[in-house]
Picture 1 (cartoon, rainbow, N blue to C red):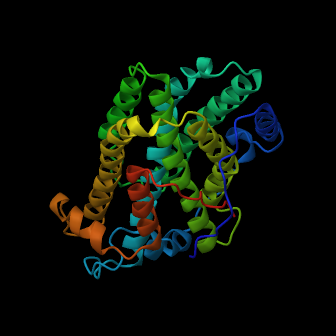
Picture 2: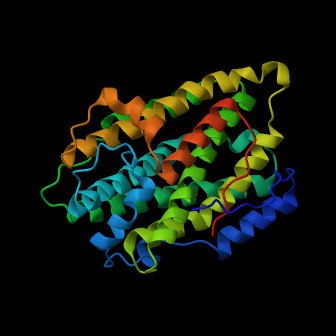
Picture 3: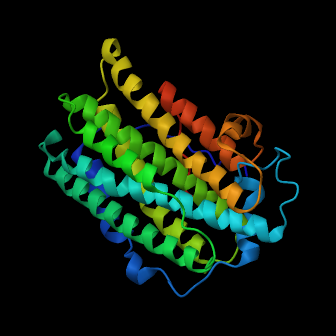
Length: 306
């Protein structure tokens, strides 16, 4: 799917922009426990429809023996993997966001940061529940291994809060959130393009999530612009963010190797670099390109939420 583009410039920090974001958090928000139909399901055909666009194995030739059932199972686990990564990052990142209330004296800033934290907390709850729903339709399947990802994100945000410079600390926090938010909007675009039924559970989950993440991206961009590091010191957050982003991407894709093994593909961890280079899945190519731009701190337009 071609990326929808939009003209984008990070807004200047001012109360008018913040008031608009605050208003949207009140009028264009959701409560996952109420607004999502948790009795809905995603069909096997809908899961399978995502495989060619999202699988790390697509185009590598290693999955030729994988049948429809295997592709369905692969995507079910992959969805759990993406939801788990997003939910854990948001849950552990809340403590880092809470530490930024003194970053600005504006009441509008404090109000929006409160909305941001509340929304991320709801997202974490939503993804935990969605993963449980998907796992329930794989009764004989092993639970996805999440311990390494959980511990890494916990320690990552704990260490970020120890950084004495508020500018560097806020720069890193909003860099991590912006990366995850852009990835989830990519997921939403993918799911909308492949699953036409609006009531499909995973389509509901990603669509509601993207509704608020679009606002978060605007806030991230504004804060990164507001707290831009002087060029002579700009290498510091870049040097800190690069290995962290690479480690997180590695752990997410390690889980995808585990998923491939679960569906009977003879693949091992040492195959991962080759799979990353050879995959033809558009979603994967977009995420890897985003990862490279994030590490190199290149300015990119955020994906448009369709």
